[in-house]
Every structure is written in C-alpha cells, then in structure tokens.
Image 1 (cartoon, rainbow over the protein chains, first blue to last red):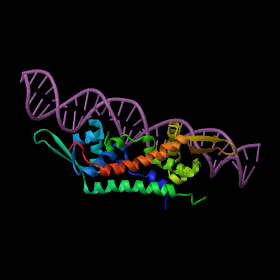
Image 2: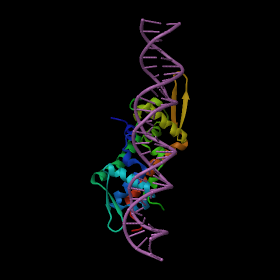
Image 3: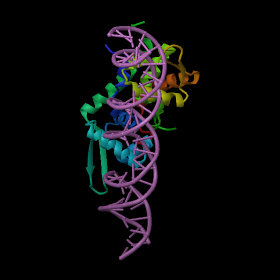
Image 4: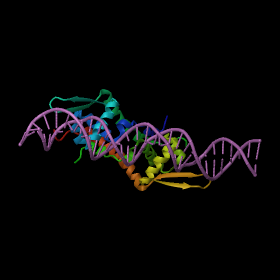
Length: 108
Length: 108
DNA sequence: CCCCTTCGGTCTGTATTGCAAACCAGAGGT
DNA sequence: ACCTCTGGTTTGCAATACAGACCGAAGGGG
C-alpha cells in the first residue's frame, strides 16, 4: 500500500551499499572467488574488502572458507539464501524504478 | 577498461543512498514538491528528511525555496543538472546489472 | 487579551558506517 | 639468520543516518 518511494527508502543496506553490491554481483556470476580475485575485479583496498566480507558473512549472505594449505587462502561464495537475496535486490530495484516512473499522487 | 564491479563500487553515494533515491525519484515524477508531501510519500522522519534535503541541495541536485508567505513553506525541485544526475544513475544501475550478468573473467 | 495547541521545519546527540593505513604471520630467497 | 613478498586482519578516524528535542509563527478558546 506504500508508495514506491517508501519502499525505496526501506531498501536493505547490507547489499545495496556500492562496494557490497559489487562483491555480491560478482559472486552471482562467479559462483566462488578468492580474496585477491575479488580485490582485483572490485578495485577495493584490502582492508575495505575484508570488512565488507565480514559484514556480508555476518549477514549470512556469503560463506567464507579459510584454508591454510600452503599459503593462506580465503574463498568466498554466496550462500543459497544470499543468492536469492542478491538477485531479489536487483529485481526490486528494477521494479521500483518502473513503479516510480508510473506513479501519480493518489491523493491529488 | 574496468570491470562492471569496479564501476559499481564507484557509484555516487549522494543519490544512491536509499532515502535520497526515494526523494529524487519522487521529484523525477513530481516536478516540484513541498516538505510535507515528500515526508508523506517517503515515510521519512522530519529530521531525517531535512538532513537529506540539505545534502542534496549542497550537492546541487535539488533546489530549495523557502517562502514565508502565510505559514512557512519549503518547496523542493530537481535542478536541471540534478534531473540528469538522477536519471543517469538509474540508467547506470540497469546497465551495470546487465554487464555484470554477462561478465566473464577476461584473465581466466 | 492571553494561553495553548498545531503546523512546519531545523538542530543536537548518538550509534553505525566506510575507508585506508598500520600491523601481523607464514613461506621463500640469499 | 635476515629480508621480503604474499595474504590478509585489526585499529583509528571522519562521515553518515537517524530520531527526538527544540523552536517560531498562526490560529482557536476562555
């Protein structure tokens, strides 16, 4: 019943944030990726990437595996739920955009 | 040359932020709106709306007119440049989404 | 005439965030 | 033994986002 704008204001910041949108969208295409690969394709600094991954992990959007076989290696992938969350987010954006364009004030 | 993900991470936060995306998208349809109208359709608190408007104004995205004719009234509208900025932002999102889906690692 | 409530916003305080630079640990080279 | 390169984590800080307190002006009742 809300306006599309109300819905926009309510968007999930966890995945909407630009850096995280980049990370999660990359994972949507890549299925699984390691730390340095993500750093290369997103252009984020190590520290920044690390903290965003922690947040995504805490939110259950991605899973992180650390293996110390040979050199340390951190592998990241979307959880099943995370995959749904991310693609739903894009869907929502597209729909809200259309709804916003079509909207006219019902109270006017 | 950059990956779509690099571009995503670089998105303009001024208009990408959910509340501001709501406000600016509303103005895209509405041409001009006053404070309370924006508050109703976005569902934001007064304080929050006020500070977002200040930021948009500082960024040159919206223009704010305060008239004290009768009761105080604040009228907000997109600047010409702001209108371009906002619709370009949506365009960019849509294109990035498609580019991300189509992307495969050129270094693999 | 004075109170007092409502309208229309702005200002203040605070908890959270995003970011980069400093730091740290292990594996090789020399 | 020492330096250094890889692969990340933790710390420190500036900027947010948000809501609730605040404030001035306009109208209504007594």
